[in-house]
Image (cartoon, rainbow, N blue to C red):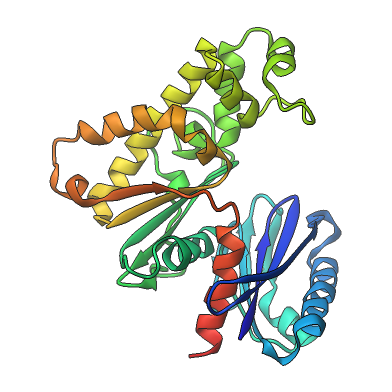
Length: 314
């Protein structure tokens, strides 16, 4: 059987066709363009799903969707997504109507967690936290091999844990949130404070085909020995360790999987992060937990495909 996985981002939406064994058969993407409205988005998305359905025939049995923001999985709607600027938007039911396939929707971090559970850990580890380190921070929780949703489906909003009283401003409108220190927008804001000549830094350290002041550029600077870049990553690791320590103390997971663009700088933030975790006074939950950095950039879309299959084939 084949499931279609969809990862809806603020800029791009990715689709994959994956077998129940986790094998990738095909993939595609298109511009999300949320400003055109949800109806236009669903229409364009359905066309791509139907193209997959045409390619793979009756073996396609389900759709799984991961979307950033506050998602109601029971009703298949986005309650609020800052990245999409959508509120109370139904996606699952309209997509089911246009494609004839059952559709299951979750928060994108939940789908990354399911992808980690299936693909990185082979379902052998039952208590998992997946932390998505991108523009912001999201997390998906799996306990006893099942997604944990909480009372109304919003469990896992770890990016908005308060790690500093009256601290840095967050995109949510609050201050001192975890992602206001470890999201890429926050990391680059701190880099701008420490790197005096941004243009010269970009010329020296950015990728040849993409001259941009971003986390890739910052990682290249750290690799080349730039002191400011290394300081930014060390500070990020320290804050990441503080946030993870709280999650580990409360939830006592077997494994934490880090994924997303920021995780590519693991060489430069892991030492500081591990130091914070190693300095904890209550040691029991830290003695067992394993922290894994995933190299799979598509855990969200693959996880969505496999989760949709799981639900459809029950």
